[in-house]
Amino acid sequence: MIWRNFGLTCLLFAMFATPSASSAEDRPNILFVIADDQSHAHTSFAGYKAVNTPGFDRVASEGVYFRNAFAPSPGCSPTRAAFLTGRHTWQIENAGTHASSFPAKYVAFPDLLEQAGYFVGMTGKGWGPGNFKAVDSRPRNPAGPEFSKRKATPPATGIGKNDYAANFADFIEQRPAGKPFYFWCGGVEPHRDYEKGSGLRMGKSLDDAVPPQFLPDTPEVRSDILDYCVEIEWFDSHLVRMLKQLDELGELDRTIVIVTSDNGMPFPRAKANLYEYGFHMPLAIRWGDAAAGGRVVDDLIGFVDLTATILDASGAAQPGQPYPIAGRSIVDILRSREQGLVDPSRDAVFAARERHSSSRYQNWTYPQRAIRTPEFLYIRNFRPDRWPAGDPVVLKDDGSLGRAHSGYTDIDSSPTLDFLIDQATDPVLGKYLQYAVGKRPAEELFDIVADSACLNNLAGDAKYAPARQRLADRLTAYLTQTGDARVLDGGEVWETYPRYSAIRQFPAPETASTRTSDAEQP
Image 1 (cartoon, rainbow, N blue to C red):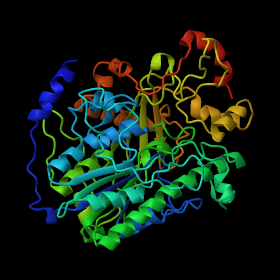
Image 2 (image 1 turned 30 degrees about the horizontal axis):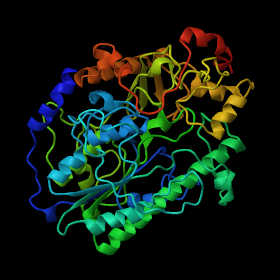
Image 3 (image 1 turned 180 degrees about the vertical axis):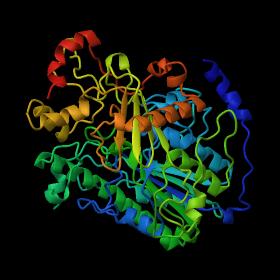
């Protein structure tokens, strides 16, 4: 409560750095394009044959492709809040979990850009889900003023009808003369639901839809992946149009174009998991002559670094104490002509997860923290007694126990999940459900170079004990330094933040235990 009462005072008296840009002409425009639920592997630039992303590919080939970019969380709402504030999810209270609130004491950088003279706007999905008016009554979505009147006719059901590119055109038309702009284009694609079979209907081939190793290689799963790729392509088509608009206006080379996603693919063991396919993101940045194109960079980049980069490049003020940003600008990397590993000090990123969906008894979270280096991914699970994908059983409306496997609601409903549940007792395919829903130990360690699917936990292997200890110590030190309640006092405050989306009911763990035996065994 002390922090809530202190919030507006801190906002009013925050210290700001002096802007470095001298005039509007010196400052770049900024176009930020963020998909909803797209893993790093699924662009044609990255070589995935089932998808064609000419917009992303153009930004990557004419600009810089970042091979190791990581979201701050494997869920949309906390990722977006961390990016907007430049602070880790454990540093922003309610905003660091899913579908809660966004205290105004944590300044959103579009407000700082606006104060610095930028024309600011957004279309589609901004920050959310959540209630940005619940604490301190923010007057608008933290991503900026909305431009979403134009509608389109999508090629499949399940795809949103927002005409992102047309709304961007409206925004540009309304821009005051001489002002640089910042625009947030937030897709709702490829978030589920999908039109089942849309990929096949549109001529895609099952042969191209190679699933990651944590999913079974079956026609059902491949078809689901094709449907996911249809939505990726739809959103990318709007990026193509926006780039064309900027080209025709002569503004493209004056614009920093950042293209990424908020978390991984909405499939079991991907989204809502701190494994590679949950928080390893596509990232490409184009900045005209200021960033030499055709480069691939291997430095580890976090979204809080993107926040620092935007404020640095724009010359806008940066928040000072008590809520400074946690990231480091990558303007130096963009302006360099180097590729590969450019800055050896960028050797780790950190990520976290608390609540994703309403998925457990009394809305409990599944708290995790992770450190990712070039070689390893180390994850700490603070409540290994809980189910990582959600409790297996949901209560019926009358309060009675539902059927086994009716839960797992941290996994988006999908044909793939249905298939895994149907095959739960199959001697060959049953393991895939366990990859997604089975309980996990307190520590996980993966050799990312050899095991990008994160299936072989090395935390108990004596050969890797030094690496495990080194990463565990570094993670603890960083979380302590940055004030994470999970390491300071247990972090039970995370169980108290209100949820403003729907809340499901689950039986108490001791009641549910009689219904989970078949969920625990393949």
